[in-house]
Image (cartoon, rainbow, N blue to C red; front, side):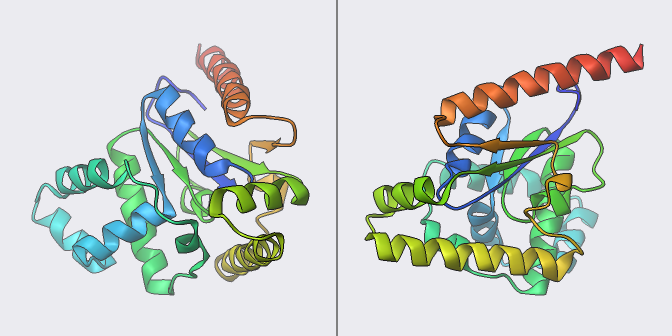
Length: 217
């Protein structure tokens, strides 16, 4: 990936791995927009959009991007509940989310966190796919701390989200989200802080950009 050109970085992550925070911090470091599934769902609810309506707005040359961007600024400062991530979207919602994300990414560089990111941008030019994972014990402890759950409740939440996300991927693609061939970089968070992970990613991006620049010479 060449960071000097318009790019998209996708982060798939396990619940309790810290991936959502990593995505936000990475976007801040790169000074680009950050989008996650919860935010996109909020956008579709706010504007009541379907794929057809998105295309109609674009055809009329309305400033849909400015409207989205203004709403993004308002909503991105709040932390939407993790429970929102457990909801499986319908096929029509998935298509709408895909179109919204691709239109946003076409405008400028961004970081996208969510279980479908590597699918949405699989054929996108100049992109990077990252997977954030952690040991089950680390994930349980983080979910207990972040959501105020008991150990039993945390385990149940993790298992529900794991199953839901894997089912989602298998429904729309002949692959598994655990297949490392879907990613350019996989990070195990055991023993690492979110800032450590961002440093690893930034170093990888710098090296990738250098290789891209050399290859184009």
